[in-house]
Every structure is written in structure tokens, then in C-alpha cells.
Image 1 (cartoon, rainbow, N blue to C red):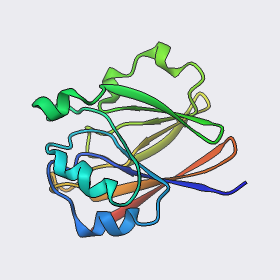
Image 2 (cartoon, rainbow, N blue to C red):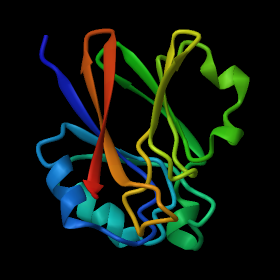
Image 3 (spheres, one colour):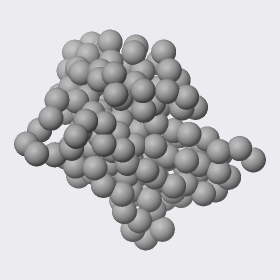
Image 4 (cartoon, one colour):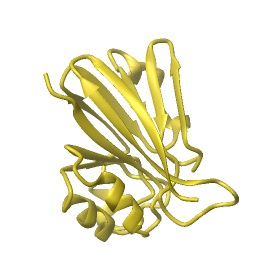
Length: 154
């Protein structure tokens, strides 16, 4: 079984950085965890790989209304749940979930809790405070998922 590479990006806030596109190049799919702020961001990402996106608190307008607040996808034997703000994660949504991808805080973070891998790729958009500009990657093989965070701009 081959490894599926799923690019993780969030909180772009209408900024498509060349460093983000370079990091995501060659991915099998991309997950955007919200605060996209303009449909052109998704169009740019879709040039690389199929995109799954959720609506963030800054995503407004007709284009954003088409996006779900949360979604679940299957990659190989791994079930991934995506929601912008972890505070909006319903406990019942975790049944059978292997990975949860969130954004909102702009803080890159990977943690396993109760057998579930939680990943926040951080923000790939405009720098906020002293937080890094970052994105992530999920490597999935069969029922196993590993997350990697990557600083795009130091």
C-alpha cells in the first residue's frame, strides 16, 4: 500500500504564499481548515490537488456559504474530521474518527488524545503576533496517520 500525502493548510486570510504552494506541491489532496477569505485561494490550491475545505469565522459571502462548517473524509483506512475552531468540535463527532484537523488559533500543534490525532497546521496567511507562518502534512498508510508541521516563513 502506498503512502497518501495530505497537505494541511489553514487561516490563509486571502494570502496564497509561494512557500505554501511549494510545500503542498505533489500532495494527493489538500485540506483547508478555514479562514480562507476569498475563493481564489481555493482555486490556487486546486491547481495542485483536490481540496476539501471548511468555513471559518472570517469566511463570509455567497461563495463561503457553500462550504460546510465541518466535514469528514476517508483516506485509505483513516477517517479525518475537519472543523475550523476546535471549540466547535462536537464530542459526538469523534465517534470512529482517527484524525481531527482544525485551524483558528494560528498556533501549529500536534497532539494525540484518546487515540485521536489532533492537528492544527497553524496559519499560512499573514503573520499574527510572533506565531510562525506554517502548514502541515499528513502521511497516511493503511490505518496509520502521521502529522508533520512545517514552518513556511521564519
